[in-house]
Amino acid sequence: MTSTFARAQALERALGCPFDPDTAMSLAGGVRADESESEPVEAYEAAWAAGLHRDLVPVSDGGRLDSFESLTAVVRAVSRRDLAVSIGLGSTFLAAAPVWIWGDEGQRRRVAELVLDRAWGTAGISEEAAGSDLLATATRAVPYPGGHVLNGRKWLVGNGRRSAFATVLAASEPSYGLFLLDFDALGDAGVRRLPKVRTLGLRGHDLSGFDLDDCRVGADAVLGRPGRGIEMVSGMLQFTRTLVGAAGLGVADTALRIALRHARSRMLYGRPASALPPVRALLARGFADLLVAECTELAAARALDVARQRTALWSAVAKYVVPGLCVDSVAASAEVLSARAYLREGVAGGAFQKLRRDLAVTPVFEGTELVQLDTVRAQVSSAARRRGASAKLPLPLLYGFGDPVASPAPREQRPSLTFGGADEVVDLLDETVEALGDPELSKLARRLLPARDEARAVLHARGTHRTDETYEAARRHCLVHAAACCLHTWLHRRTALGGLAAEPAWLLVALRRVLARLGQPVEPDPAAEELLVRRLEDLDDTDRAFSLVPLRLAPQHRAPTL
Image (cartoon, rainbow, N blue to C red):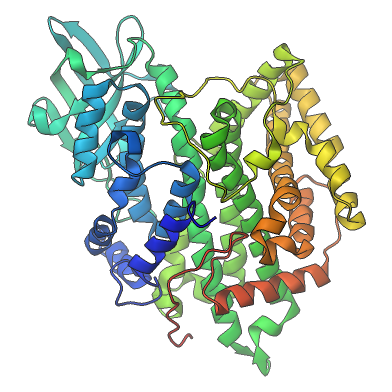
């Protein structure tokens, strides 16, 4: 684990504790930028100083991105401080990803040069009228001798005003294409930047757009094979939507930490609020939701390193599950804080309300929950036509969180549009349930099997149709997948991770949280919840992440709370 998570741990030390108002990427600084709707300049400078731009460029192209599992931990560390910063950097990665995957040597060299020089990138995919329907893209690229002329408007894109380069989806011949626009080289000729859009959260992020008006680009602007733009966008999203979950985990960690510290210092009825059973139950359930999300996210991120052939399905599942669970975890923290969750001052400098507003975009960013369910519906239903596909991926490899692996460069193993029909996460659930050995865990886990089979039966039989029934089946499939990730983690990784990961309490509460979402009646386990809260308190006292991974944080600043 030392090498895989070393970068995130070094970043924690470099950035310092977000609760310390004197650090460059502090919660207090983020609130100030949010209040003025301005970029968190000092935080970005700290990010550059820590070398975060190098994490966006593969090692093969001169950066230090050699593992998506490692990058996930980095994104989580940044998002623990300010989601606006990680989303800004993530928008650059979104723009660069298709270049890393399909770009020729010259295109990769130029984009690597820009990113390593701290330039911003933007993915010109979204349009106001098209929404998530890529086939409704109205931007056009018309051939002319030596290149193309682009006309259209890209709107609600990250870094739209400050970007030095863009990857743009446009209708062209023989079909939709993806184009690399070097704004610096163009001198913005034919490009008009649009105003920043005012938003509820992420007020410090440049969410804007640009108009292309007879924008002329050369033949070297074409990315990949002509006419494969939709395919390329679908492929690059497997990388970027996976990373959105990591951002949510970082926010949920800080929100839960704020709630825990407040509850431990807030006196109610002559004792700390954290001593009250309802408050402890909220903390336990919020923590359990975070851990379910973490197991799902870590498996999806590691799949980008060891099982890229499966990520057409697993990245969509993770994108549906993880942000939603993080939102639920933060909602539980808000209940603990009560009225103080709404204040723009007081506890943690009023940071909680910003965290909650910022987090609200993660279920929408990189495709809404409905878009992800539609992808899951289509992927699982298509697997029915490939019955007989056998599971080939060893689960100890997929769930070997922290074990270094050789991750292929994006261009060396390009994403597939389908997952091949074998889904080891849910296909091998039966074997994992039988191997648990613990009667209570086994009893809960067996309740997942009929839920899996029923959802899959609906999707195999009627999944080609967009109906309430098939979307509900896709939702249930995602939840079973999340619970399976927890069980596989317990079986294959608890000894190596140690600490919390080796204690059954977290899994007992986590399984109950998923079963409840599946509509199955389940009684709470107060003893397991109590043990989980005690572990939560220990992790905070010893400056460790709220995680199954034993990641040490920057030494924690503990100012007096209200």
